[in-house]
Length: 118
Ligand code: 5GP
Image (tube, rainbow, N blue to C red; front, top):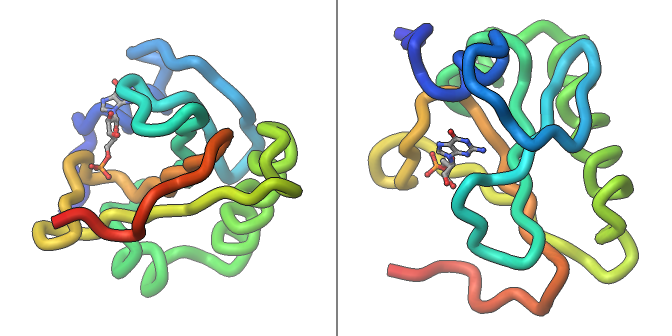
């Protein structure tokens, strides 16, 4: 069940401000409030999807394409495409997902450490 009062739903409705990087019909990108790398941006679909399971099963083709294209555009806007960067999607309890609206983290701007911290 999608919680319409999650923090990213409020950002999408303009009820809470964000430091916007990019927006189009399908996606919104904004800086993470608690950055874990020199560059740390979140890219979210505009549709109400809890996580990747929900998005993969229920999003329409144009929403899926739109989100993937937005991910590439945001990397270009951030200037990390050449040096490299990392996407991360935390999914569900074991994935450590805190906000129940699908979001891709983009980390970059520096050499990133090992993939997984336990
Ligand atoms: P998760 O752990 O769900 O993958 O990541 C949630 C992310 O959302 C965290 O990195 C956290 O810092 C970020 N975050 C939580 N609340 C806000 C907010 O109100 N504004 C912004 N810009 N980021 C937020």
